Structures are given as structure tokens and as C-alpha cells.
Image (cartoon, rainbow, N blue to C red; front, side, top):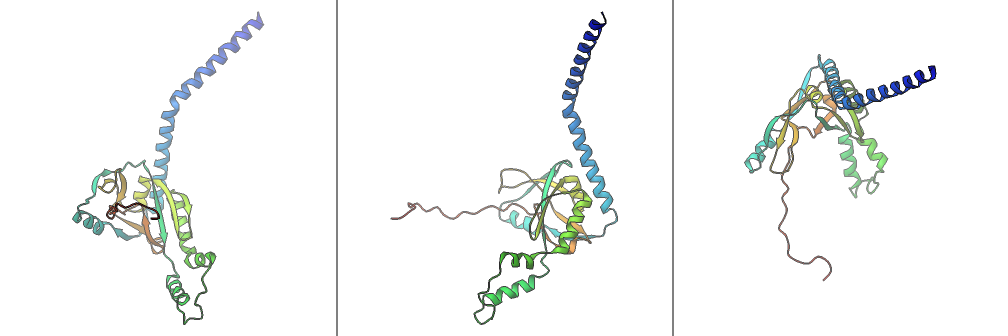
Length: 229
């Protein structure tokens, strides 16, 4: 009798566990959505905390480019604000503190009268002259503080991803969805942006932020065979 009771108790317990697992599986998409929103809220809060006492430096505006596109018959349409939860990628291009030295050296290497003529630099030498170590450290700290994720690092550029809400606070701007005759899909762009004074002196420009799509003009098609005659 006791064995029978234990047997049926085990069967019922297993069925109960399966039902609980099924309920969790059904609820998981909702839970994931809530988790995603919580992550965005946390990142936005982190960005707000790190930038709350910043002094801002206005960097760039795309108004001149937008004017040229409109005058050339390729106007940009600003549809509306981008969703705060949309993930967006930006690439920060650092200033080269040795740009003048690099340009002078290139001129010497190409000048037949110079003792440096023909002494081309190696890849490592070029990277050494184009790297901004102080700027890298400042930018990485800035991205870390606002909660952005660094996805790629190059000699003079760093790419990072974050929700729109984080970038809006980090750049002291608004991000919008735009359309253009030059492309067949929407883009996320700002009209201008600023940076905190701690990082602004190191940044040359940021791509995928205010740059607008430009139509590609192809030359006339030549109706002639390709290849040897």
C-alpha cells in the first residue's frame, strides 16, 4: 500500500514539474521583453548619473549638408523620434596629436632632396604616429561610464553600441528616424550633437550619428564589349 502511494505521489510530482516548466516557457518571451526594457532603463539611468554634472561642448551639425541635399533635389525626411530601446552603433574617430609631424615626415619621404627620401614607414611605425593613447583611455572610460558596449577597436577609432536613450543623453541630442531618396531603408540620425568637455578634445568626428546619405552618381554606361579585342 505504501509503495503504491509513493509511486502515485512521484507521478503527480513529475506532472506538476512539467506543468510549471510549460508555464515558464510560455511566459519567457514576456519575461525577456521586461528584462530588455529593464536593461535599457538601467543603462539610461547609468548614463544620466555619469553625465548629470557635465559641461557640454557643441561638436557638429548636419544643417549645411541637409541644405545641400535639399537644393540638389535629394531632401531628407525626418519621420519622428527613434524608439529609446533601439540599439544603435556609433564610431568615434580620434584626433591624431602628431598629425603635423606625420604630414612633415610624409613630405620628406617623398622629397628627392631629403635624406629621408624613399625611407617608407612600416605598418607599426604608422600606427605609432597615428595612435592617440590618451584619447583612447578617455573615450573608453566615457563609454564605460554611460553603459555602452565597445564592439571594435582600431588604431584611431572605436565603435560602440548602446540603446538610443543612452546615446541621446551621451550626445545631449535627440535621435530620429529618417528617409532619403538615396537609400531604400530608414536610418537613425541626430541633427547635431555635443560631448562632455572631458572627452570632446580627443574626438575628431563620430560616424553613423549626423552624417546623411548622399546619392551615388554613376557615369554613362558604355555599350562596348569588355575584354581584349
